[in-house]
Length: 116
Image 1 (tube, rainbow, N blue to C red):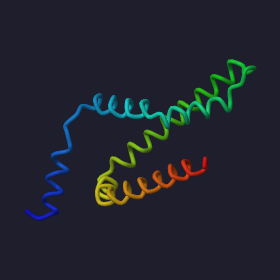
Image 2: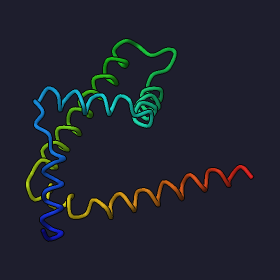
Image 3: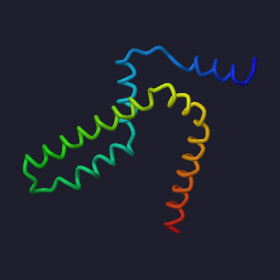
Image 4: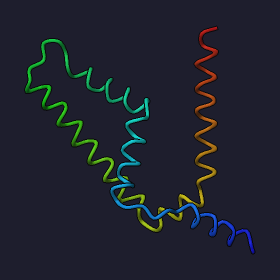
């Protein structure tokens, strides 16, 4: 078995037949359990809502956040579900994850050393 065949066999073994509901729940839980995204949304909301905010401005900000979320995540779903993008990501996955790991390691190191 060639290395390409091994990679294809491993990729197909990793793909599990899940219902759309199960996939949605998995993505929703992954996003809601991510403290980075929760804190980012809290920061965005606190920029627009103050102690004297009217209910109209609160509704506009929360509605705007909802529209942004749906638009962004539906866009991700459409773009990243196309066969060319899936193939590209599978080819580049190790490089992408390696670069992100190095970036976050560097950022974390900078944060640690900035206190000294």
